[in-house]
View 1 (cartoon, rainbow, N blue to C red):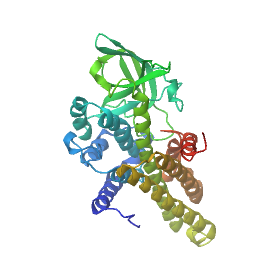
View 2 (spheres, rainbow, N blue to C red):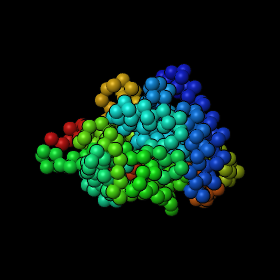
View 3 (cartoon, helix red, strand yellow):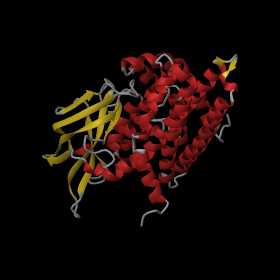
Length: 385
């Protein structure tokens, strides 16, 4: 595979993460999926590899790698299993990201070393039952009372929020009204276990069944005023920035998942014989695989360009949306054809492609649906005044 101008460090990272994913995660992925089990053991092993806080500076306990390296790591984990790719992506982009980019020095020194070591996980409380794409419809609120934030409301579909490793949630809350009458949105850190904060594990998911997803409830939950992340009223900006970064990781999950599904299809088509020859030799199969390889190549170029723009400190929001949109939908097309090549076996759980087929769908929904990505892109290219 062409190295896309990667540094020696990035190539070594890819090799090491791939080896780990194939030898440690792959043997466990199917049973963890079937039993809906979040593995603290594998999560801690990923932390020991330095995959949590991967872009965090050494001052706060991170290895201080670039964003492209981070996305390569997510890509390689997701090539084997989407659930563990989601754990890494959410831990970094949604959990650590808001604290690292917007937190106070006190908050960074208190929380980031533990998060980078994988002693605990952080989550980002954004989505609510009535507020998905319309984040402005959030109802969770916080009022300042005697030096404490008193939080009431609920969140849903929050990754890394309920396991024994869940340590803190950055909760987007309505903290008042701005001068223009619009909602004032702020982000507040709430440690797991705080009285009034309940986190319930969600089960019965179609996809990412080995990742930790929760419903969160806040009932007069009190935390110190100093738990405010950044300045009061900056929560909406923080959310948009967090999602921009997160889109790159979701794109990496789509790219890695597409690569893994393509490899499964290619291997199977070379082994499966019909009419006395491998089905890979049939033009209809060969053309499917050729299209997969072409789209994956294009997706990798797009994502890596977006990462390099971010690493260079250049505007990258448009390219992040493009990468998230394209990589997630490429995985959809690849897994669909990969199942087709497997025939009836592709519908059986004993074949990994069945899990890949289920796992892809959230990529077109989470951290901004494909429709929202198209809205972001169309605005960026000047479609709206």
